[in-house]
Amino acid sequence: MPSLITIFRDLPDPRSGNAQRHDLLDLLTIALVASVCGAETCVDFAEFAGDREPLLREFLRLENGLPSQDTFSRVFRLLDPQAFGRAFEAFLSDLGAGGPGVVAIDGKTLRRSFDRAAGRSALHVVTAFGAEARVSLGQRAVAEGQNEITAARALLARLALDGALVTGDAIHAQAETAQLVLERGGDYLFALKGNRPAMLAEVARFFADPPGPLEAFETTDANHGRIETRHHRVTHSVDWLFGDRAEPGAPAMPGLATLACVTASRNGGPPATRYYLSSARLTPEAFARAIRSHWAIENSLHWVLDVTFDEDRARNRTDNGPENLAILRRLTLNLLRTARPNLPISRKRKRSAWSDDFARSIIGQMR
View (cartoon, one colour):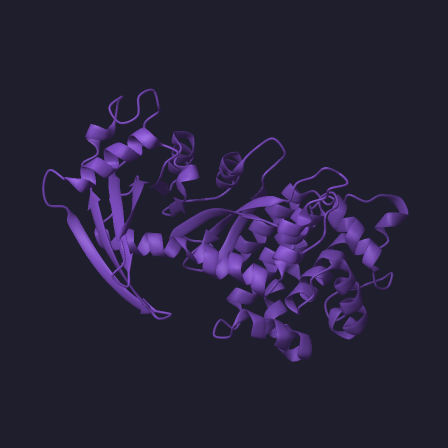
């Protein structure tokens, strides 16, 4: 398995002495294959290894037999999540899943990862998601005393964003985050909401009474028994927004090139309008595609992790365990996404559990 050996060989082993009886690469590979086949916990990983030992020995030596559930638990508790995350990103690059397009950033809380006895809140992680390829590009946990903004910046600083359009909610509409995206070679498209009240008021006033006709694009969707109409408008006249007029004392958004808004109504109900800031010169059509693509992180990542991987009920709470297992789940999902793309994720996990031949077609990407 040259790809995994190359990528994981420099991953520091947090164990010492007799605790290193089982090779770290073997442990991580077993956990990954087990997760592909439907395993969720360290107990599952150990039981999977016992039941599917012949399959695992096709590509692992397992010189000291099979690891126990305590061994898996110890490794994931102690493993450095930042180092594991970097290996995850390198493995993604090795799969060739990167590339330009919409990169959505958003946070997610693992609700059952809190630990009342230790006084620890539930783990909150920020993920960068490639909307076109539908794969996770990286993950960063929100450290104690920090917030989603700083975690997103730390994550973006590790990603190659050449040609990408980074989308995010209004919490990320910060000058420092925007500058980081530009320095990494990308453009940004951030929502504008009440956390920047003066700028929001100015932009809303502009679109309510524009000085002239604006480029526009309208879409109509009929899904789930409802009809939704969206009216998209953009302007590249942004110079008036700089300085103290829009938001006195606040830093201007660097590279700002487009202001945009979308007005949506469902089944003829009252319209709702949302506003956006972007460094890319977007047409109304490109703006419409981008904001729809952003929601892929909810529909194709967060929803799948909760429904198919049961992440919202994962109860691992100790040390680095919750964060490392969250990384493992995203790596597993990437593998499942890129293999046999015409089948649903849940079905691929079931068939991998039932059939060694089918499992080989998924885990063959790791070789």
